[in-house]
Image (cartoon, rainbow, N blue to C red; front, side, top):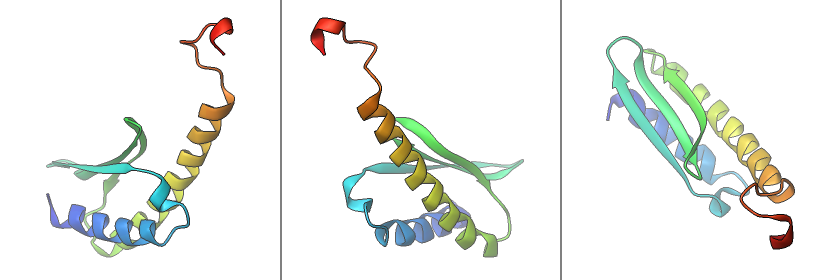
Length: 97
């Protein structure tokens, strides 16, 4: 929506594409401009928010922030996938496992 949001998305997508497992996961990036805090950005994976930040008004900081965001998103996805495969599903009974 905003120039800052487009910059963040462009940098994030570039870093994301260069990561090893980016093709395995589907994420979505959302932006909400706010008058008080600038642009609010969050990343969803499996309908869960795994990254959330506010973009600073300085466009120069967006590149570094997007690179850090990719690292955090990858770490949190790995953590969620590990939890998903090792934790029992509370909706299943013992006989259904």
